[in-house]
Each structure stands twice: as structure tokens, then as C-alpha cells.
Length: 525
Ligand SMILES: [Zn+2]
Image (cartoon, rainbow, N blue to C red):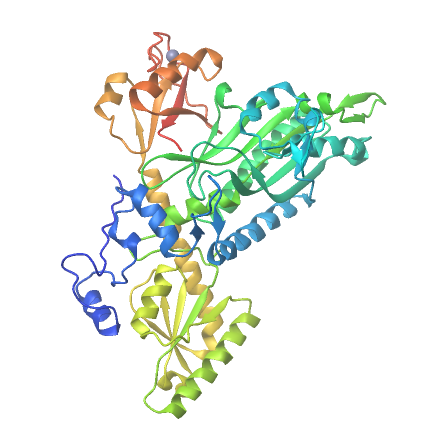
């Protein structure tokens, strides 16, 4: 069952009342969301995602898409504030598992990119080259590539950092942007410049590298699902989707509201492939030199933000998990009849803002001269989790009126309980967002044991769980066949579960062979 959201706005037929407190009250009585005239509210998030998504990014002032270089986007303050919180949480998780931050150069001499042949072949078509400085054309060999990813840059440096067991494991991450000349672009989903974290670890044994890949998956689950509320399927990627130069790739797929899979972080076991090319060696316990074992892990904060917007927004606009929200509380002063009371209200708002900020709660005051109802709608659309309404009565009484982005009605709270009440509200909001996202995701799986069953469900929006021959190169023809008939891509086998089809079950890809695996397939970005 797909979750359907029907949107109403001031421009929709049948929602004639004007924005403002009175109109909103009427709407609430009729069970309709308030009008706010946002473009995104005209579209159904699931059924009209391709119109809804850019409208949402624009309405909430997240992204400016008009920059005159194809595939490059401007991130506006609301997006950057959100990404900062996401970075902080992710970096804390990395540092909590022994990773250290570093920053490496953004360019690489072409000789470095050429060191690992598969890696070069995989990335070369997407590389931006610096071939000229001023009016001087650089001779071949001196050209510089803008990093599409940093294996070759970091490993050139790692070589000098590692000589013995005492230097291992080495766990380094950097938060940076990378550039890839993608043909198609979609803001916060696919672009020529994006912001990510890349963690590159080095170990003395293959076993530790294998364990790190599992630890990376656990981190994705903890941060992206646990803290950002975005559910994912973790799969071992087929050989044809393995990271160029890696032994194997594990990746996380989430599902956008249109039922298409979107890859979130992937983690790669590089084995000794790069260490042999980049001469990363250590002296082992027997006194012999040995090539090190490596992994890399790349959560794209930029893309996770896109998934977060798409996953959590509802008919009123954005919704953010409490810890991620660019602003967690908005204080709306309610205009009083007497100017002296207005003064009191303004002072009270300032006091509360200072107090909440001291408690580490990001707070803004909307002191604009718009009507309160307009402000409520606006900040709901922007996804601020908690609203405080502050009128003369509240200012004088020591009580505060709270409203949550995900709960109906308003809650009066005594000032002494304010921080606790806000944090509790934030936790309830997180639980609501996660539960709704999990339900949508978990309802999106169907199992089809035959090609006929797949044809009966060819309009399915979500993951197909299907019997398949092989995710090594010999399964490539069956991958192509499913791709051409259903426009779906085999994403891989589920990690942590050895899912086998019943005996005698045939591969749905048409090769005629017995199925060896249950795989997951979906339309994808
Ligand atoms: Zn097959």
C-alpha cells in the first residue's frame, strides 16, 4: 500500500478561506490542513513526486537551481543549517568509533588517478580536468583532476604515515565536496558537485577490513535511520555495481515517495588492491613487510538531506527530526491591544530565546508584522518542530503555549517546565516521523517467485524480492533483461540474511538456470 497524501492549498477548489487564524480554525474543524499558498502543496508527494520535489525545495528556500552551470546548485541557508546538524551528528558517530578528521587536497595529478586501472576506468568519464592555468596549457602529465572521490589522493599520503603495526588501524575521515560530471541532475539527489563525508580506513588484516564494512553499515543504520529517521535496505551489490577497484561493495538503499530506490552510503572493501598500487605497507608481527587492507565509506550528506526532505515532508511542508532541524523552536509574539503589553511580550520572547539557546535549543523569534496564522503556516511549512505562542496573557502568567509540528492542538506548559516539555515534544515528533517512514518503506516490498507474477505486479512502486541466478558477472544478462522489461535494477542480496529460493525455483531473468539467491530489485535514481 502506498501512502497517499492529498494536498490542499489556497488555490485548490473547495478551500476558499483566507490564511489567518480564523481561516485556520475553520480548516482544522473541517479536518483540512491550513492554506498557505505554497506551490508544493498543490502536488501529491507520492503520485506527483517529480513536480512536488522541486516545488518543495523552492518553497522552503532550501535550494536555488538557477545557477548558470549545468548540474551545480546553490544551497540556501535553511539547507546549510540542516546539513551542519547532519554533519555534526555523523562526525560524532565517526569520531566515536575511532576516526580522526583530516582535510586533503581537492586536486590530483593525473598520474595518481591512473595508478589503479579499474578505478580510473570507472571514474574517468566523470572527471573534471584542469588543463590550463591562466593562458598556459598544461602539458600531459601535469594536468590536474578535481577529486571525484579521494582514494588516490589520500592513499598517496597514507604511504608515508604507515610503516608498522603501531600505525594501524588508521581511521581517517574528511568532510568535503566532490565533483562528478553527471549527465542527469536533480537537486540534492544527483549533481555535479556534492557534499559528503568519506572515511578511509587501513588495517593489518582482511578480517578487520571485513568487520569495518559491517561497522559502516551499523553506523548508517544508527545515524541515518536512528537519528534522521530514514529507513534503508542494506545489500551486497552485484559485481557490475561494485565500486571501481573494490573487492566488494555493500550499500544502503532508501525509497523515495515515488517508489524509486535511492542509494545512500556505500562501504567498500578494497582488500589490498589499492595498497599494492600505492605501496601502503607495514611490518607484520613476523617482521615481514605486508600490504595493508583498506576500506572506504561515503555518506553523502547532501543526498541524505534530499532523502530526508522527501521522506518526512507532509501536506503542510517540511518536517525535520528534532536534532536535525535548522531551527528547533519558533517563538511567535501575538500582538496585544495595548502597546505596553506588546513591549512586555517582546521582552518575554527575547528572554525565552536566550534561555532556550543557553539550553542548546536552536530558537528564532518571528517578529515580522505578518498575521499569527500566516506565521504558523509558514514555520510549519519550513518544518520547525516546536512553536511557542506568546501573547500578553502568557507573558504575564508564566505559562507558555506550545504547538508541535506533528501533534494536533496546543499544549499549555508552565515556564519552569519549558525545556523538558520541548525536548519531550521533540522526541515524540522523532518517533512519529520514524514510524511513518518505516511503515511506508516496509509496505513497499513484494515477493514475486515467477516472471508472470512480476508481470501481474509490473506497476509496483517499491522493491521486488525475486529469485535470481547470480550477482557475479554471469548474472549480467538477466540484470539487463529485467531492466529492459520492467525498468528495474537488481540492487543486490540482503546483508545479514542468507535468503535462498526453494529448490527448483528458476531465475526470473530468463536464463533458464535455477535461482541461487533472492535479490532485491527496484526502479532507481
Ligand atoms: Zn538468470
